[in-house]
Length: 89
Image 1: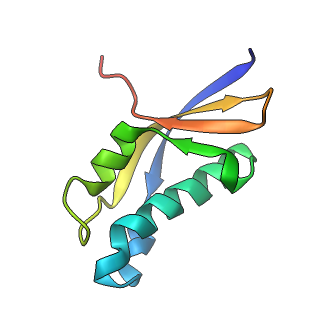
Image 2 (image 1 turned 135 degrees about the horizontal axis):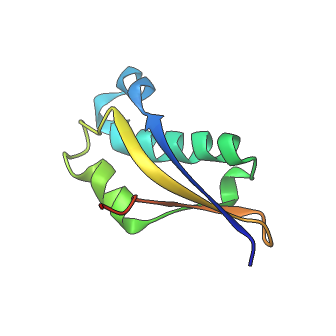
């Protein structure tokens, strides 16, 4: 199984221009779009781990984080990507 692993910081600042009641869902979709564009896979094939989702929603609906440090695994066989939290050393 051919996998490529990349760590990156994703800026979610654009979310502040959406309605207050839609910021966390918008942050999840923005993360999905940015990862999709970075690793060149379709948006539908980006899988976001539950821990990343919980981190985005940790401060509630109206205040998602402005940036996230994530680890991206690109799986070549099915042209998909997984978004995970990086391991703490």
